[in-house]
Amino acid sequence: MHNLFVLLLIVLCASMFIVSKPVKMGLLIAAAMCIYEYNLPSRIGQSVIVLPLCFFLSEYDSLRRIIIRRNNNILIWLLVVGVIYVIYSIIISPHLRENYMHLVYPIRHIIGRYLLPFVALVCIQRTKHITIIFNISFYAIIIMTLFGIVNLFFHHSHYVDWLYEGRVVVDYLEEAGAKFEEAKRFRVQATFHNPFDYGYTCIVGMLLFWFGYLKKYVSKEKFIIITVCALFGVLSCNCRTVFFSFILALMCFSFICYDFSSYLTHIFGAVIVGALAIIFVPYLNEKFMLMLTMFDRTATISGSSIDMRIGQLVVVLNSINNRELFGCGVGFFAIDLGWHQGKYNLKGTDFFGLEGSYLQTLLETGVIGTIFYFSIIGIVLYWAWMKRRTYRLEASFLFSLFFLFFVFGAMTGELRTAYLTFLLSGIPFKFILSQETHNKSTQAILKQSRISRIIQIGWRIKNRQRFNS
Image (cartoon, rainbow, N blue to C red; front, side):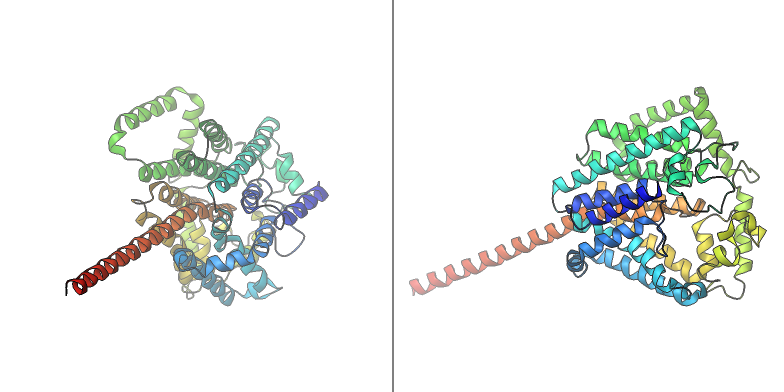
């Protein structure tokens, strides 16, 4: 299977120079959902970094023209802050100056994050282009769900075993696809090593198709199918964080997108139906009660508790004592504390299960790095919030997407979520920026026509005065 994935990756990389632009973006999304876990035998790492690298090489001229445009200021700011954050991380981190990591790290983060929103600006030029992207994404989610169903049936993810063939999985003693086979809480992995990533991808997929349905790019039948697939993933991954993030994401999208004053009756009815379902459906009741344990200060149901997270924060603050500004350097947790050898070989047991992207960011990059991290997310959230009145659908999708990214990362860590989040964020960015450019062009034409009209009237008055004299 390893050779098959190598061949598949070669075909996908070659297609970045052959197929049309919207198909390219659709393939990037599909790769993020289905083959993210496949790693190349190189320092670059995940195969999904190689694909956007090939994409940007094939569309270099288009990307350059888009970057130098003045109407894309928000994305330029996002890129600049991201690049400064990467340079800062390399300067303060001894591990990033070893074994060519000073070259690999920028490739992973700049191409695998901060340049990804530009993909949509390059690929979406007409209405039919976005339809092509939704069609490819639809089949990718279907494939991911089918692997999830097989995983649930056999209690073993053979597909993940294929992705990890020939590699050593240090975080668990079991095989990659069988680590939950005998666990008390079985979790569906589908196409990911970590079930949290599967659940997050399902939530993001549902938000994407909800946005597409409201924009009339997705049929009602496809939206229902994707909703069913997303619910299956959220429930079968059996993760409290995913279930809670799913509820918050839906509430966030609905709050911005809809006018609740005209939907009070429907909301009240939905709340009643949801409450009755939780009470009378044992499976939903079990999932709801499981989610509530995440707020219990002492609960340790195959996961963490609030007390554990507070303890981790205290340990992090103690670890960066006397170096609060710059932290311990990127790679400290994985290399110096032995995380790359598996979580059972940690040198600091107090760090066991370190959760929350802000904790690791604070530990490794200090207060300055944490400010950069929150600034990147804050820039997008603030910009989307300011656009909510004029571009309600686009702003609701963009805001809920990054709000989900922030909440999920704060509770569990980023894991594999950054790539798909930044890639899909380009879609609402494209809609808003294109509409703003169109509006400015229209206003300029109207202004020019008014000036021309005034000049014509002036000439008429002047000619009439000459004729009368």
